Length: 206
Image (cartoon, rainbow, N blue to C red):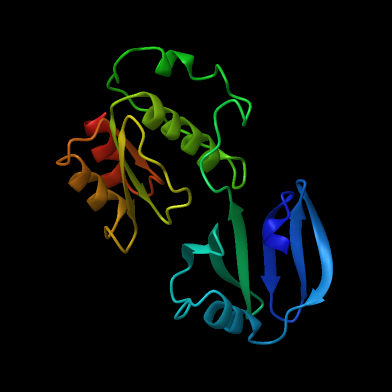
């Protein structure tokens, strides 16, 4: 089962073309071709999704968390699947055991703004998930996340987490952030800053 292979992180599906996977960081051709309308069949019969009018999804399938991205290439349907860990990794696991000591050593959460940027696939979501789970495990805080979609599922520890997904829970990043400020947060994670309204509200909150 490809979902159980610990080396596989991504599956690339394109109708009428072979399936590709990323294993150990490298792309590999499986030589298994996806038939016409195969993505619709996969979505409805295997993943039990009503359709793919939304471009981004995160779902749970056979105890695995999957991030789905629907797209097209030369009028052919595509589906990109990212296989997510069952829980956020630790900072040590991703090679940052001491990077965030200035943020973590203080006994209380200080006002501020942390910006994480990088290319697609560079590990932004993984880094943020590890940092937030550390806070939840070790601090009595309330963490609110606003994401499209919610990739990692965080666990309550000493702190409490509230996760919001666009558009099911909130209509936009800016609206979700404005609502969050009325809900007693210590830390707010904004999945993306796409517009000036979100940026201005984020700076005000910080």
